[in-house]
Amino acid sequence: MMLPALIIPIFLALVFLFGVYLTFRNRRLNRGDLGFVGLDNYAKLLQDEKFWHSMSLTVQFTVIDIAFELVLATILAVALTQPLRGVRFYRALLIIPLMTPPVVGSLVWKVLYRSGNGGFFNWILWKLGLPMQGFIGDPTQALASLIVINIWLFLPFVAIILLAGLQTLPQEQIDAAHVDGANNWRVFWEIKLPYLIPFYIVAMFFRVIDSLNVFDIIYGTTKGGPGDTTRVVAVNGYENAFPFFNISYGGAIFVALWVLCMVVGSLMYMVVKRSQAA
Amino acid sequence: MQNSAISPGTQPMIIRESAQQKRERRFHFLLHVALIIYFFITLIPFAWTFLTSLKSSRDVAAAPLKIFFSPTLDNYRAVLFNQYSADSAMARVRVDIPGAFLNSMIIAGGATILAMLLGNLAAFALARYKMPEREVYAFFFLAFRFAPVFVFIIPMFIIYQQVHLYNTYLGMILIFQVIAIPLIVWTMRSFYESIPAELFDSASIDGATRVQQLRQIALPLAAPGLAATAVLTFIACWNNFVFPFLLGAKQTQTITLATITFIGYEEVAWGMMTAAAIVTIVPELILAMFVQKHIVRGLTYGAVKE
Image (cartoon, rainbow over all chains, first blue to last red; front, side, top):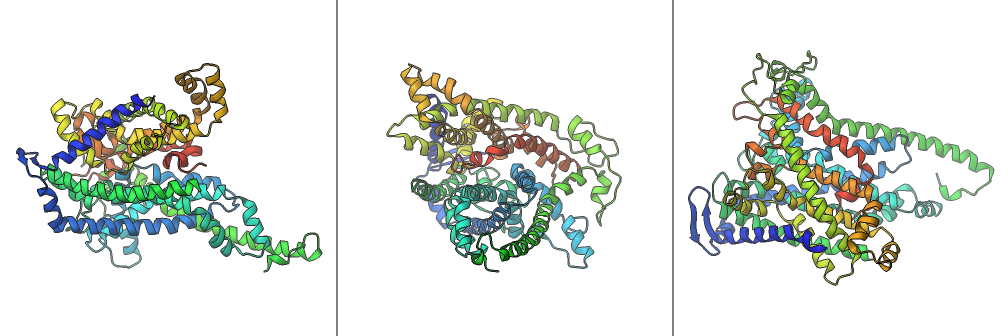
């Protein structure tokens, strides 16, 4: 029964191995295969300042993005588990950005970020008499502006996971704590938050992997610019492989990213497994 | 106010309770205000996109921007029916959105059907049969989720050009299995695991084969989960940008990809781009409404059950 389902994944795994093999050669999209070069592409990678710059941007992007998502999603999830009227309607609204294709979501934000007082945000600033901003066009603001887009897209993902978690928390446990004199604040810190830990880990598992691989929203907006300020690893690797024709070197960049994702992902997978077994 | 002082049935409790109710009502009011502000902010991008899609190309380009304008359906005429108005400054940018929509249906639909057929077999096997190497298989499927999609795209780009799968529906459907199969295997496995084991045990005593057990017991019982998983897989494929971007060209251009082509080097066709964005998103929202109940399980590959 496993076998038919394994055929395509095994084929894809072989494709991946062929990709790793390509990184040991010097293959150019415009000049063909220039022969075996061993570990040259990886040696080049280690000394490539652009690569390390992109790696640092990717880590910054991931850490800031996820920190905001976790905090904001916690607040949202707690708010949406209060006995409010219309709470189901709010929960339905929650998932709308999540269903949007990331690249289309980024285009939507590109409309809002337009420069000059024809752009939505800048028009508001202009009306308020405040200086207009460059947003994705300003080297000092571009990365932050992209993080905002990403939070908008994926905050609901984290929120609905925590929401699902809070809904399985037995109400008696909360009631008992209240009877013992605990206020809402202490119930949150001492009951809800510890209970949610496995849910946080699951959410982070997906969010960390996806943020390390962020590509769509950057391609839709800044394409790595202005300058190199948003050229994350995936954009850098894509550019080397396709527009610059160096598919072997681009491949090596993605193999490096794959190693990072595999290490981070496997560690978190083991934590998830253990927390479920307990 | 100390809750610990409450002792049921005494007179002061009634007074205190009403004070507490009052406080609760005020808290709920503030919460409503906060949530409405939050959703207002998160939905502004859609509202603005929709407004922009109703503007003529002259109104779109206006600075300062126009809050009041006479709405036009020109952009929708262009993206839905390929009818370009003569006065449209953007008539130069032509993207076949109806064709791209159809491509998306074929590719995302085809990929979902293929992955549902194959993935469910593996999901059922992983849920029901206690093989020692079960977790190894499970991890193998999940490992695709860890990997940057480019580690498949780069070698596939070379392979597809050799075997003429570049820019074909078949090639697209095949590469989309990278995201479709792991999602289905893991999500459906969790649905199958929640079916009581006794049902299968008695069926196998009666001589039902594994495939019969899957078809006659598991699939009917997991039908809502099956539908939700299929919808979420379809949405994941519909939303994907990089596969059709790098492994396809005009003939396989999907709607997600087509939307971005309104951004030219010299100008952006904002009106048509936003109209195309609306056309891309609306079908997904309609589909997503039907699967709300199982959405968490699908999005977390079965790790979180609702």
